[in-house]
Amino acid sequence: MLSVFLHKKRKAAQALDAARGAAGNAGEALEQTRQVYGVRLLVRGLLWASVYLIARGVLELQGLPPAARVALALLPTPFFAWYLWTWMKGVGEMDELQRRIELEALGFAFPAALVFLMTVGLLDLAITLNPEDFSLHHTWLMMPMLYYVGLWRAKRRYL
Amino acid sequence: MKNRLKVLRAERDWSQQDLAGHLGVSRQTINAIETEKYDPSLPLALKIGRLFEMCVEKIFTLDDERSA
View 1 (tube, one colour):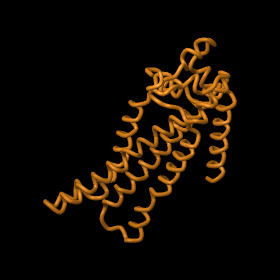
View 2 (cartoon, chains in turn purple, cyan; view 1 turned 135 degrees about the vertical axis):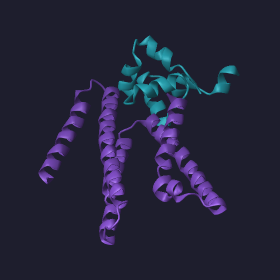
View 3 (cartoon, one colour; view 1 turned 90 degrees about the horizontal axis):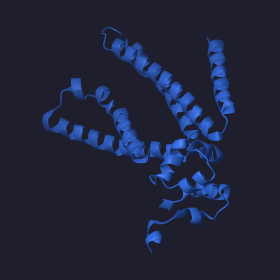
View 4 (cartoon, chains in turn orange, brown; view 1 turned 90 degrees about the vertical axis):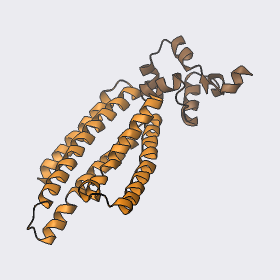
C-alpha cells in the first residue's frame, strides 16, 4: 500500500516537473502548474468529501460503541489535512494576483462565516432552531460555500 | 493607477502570454494590469521596468498625475 502511494506520489511529482520543464516559458509553466494543482485539489477534495459522507452515514447508525464512533468522527480529519496541505502548496506556486484573489476570498469568507454563526447562535436563543437543520454538522458547510462566494467576487473584480 | 503596458507590449509585438513568460506571472495577471484592474507589486513593477529598459514612472503613473 505504501509503495503504491509512493509510486503515485513520484509519478505526480514527475508530472509536475514535466509541466514545468515542457512549458516554453514561465507564464505557461505557471498555468500548467496551476492546472496540476487544480486536478490534485479536486481529487483530494472528492476523497475527503467521500470519507466524510461515509463517516457521517455510519455515525447515524445506532449501536456502535463510543470508541468506534470517536474513531469514525476523526476519520475525515487526515484526509482534510492532506487536502489543506495540497491547497497551501498550490498557493505557494501562484503568482501575486492569484494570491491576492485567494486572500480576498478568505477575507470575505471569514467575517461572513462569523456573522452567519453569530446570527444562527442568537436565533437559536430566540426561537430554538431545529437541530436537524442548524446543528454544527450542517452549519460548517456554510464556510466553504462562503469561500466560493468570496472567490467569485474576487475573480469578478480582477479577471 | 494608469499604465502603458499594452502600448509597450504592442511595440515589441508580444502577446500577453509572451510578456507573462518574461515576467514569470500568469497571462491573467498581465491582462488585469493592462485593464487597470490590478496594480502590480513593487518587485513586479521593477521587473517590468527592467524588461522594457525604462523607469517605473515612465510606465506607471498615478491617476491624478495625467490630468495635472
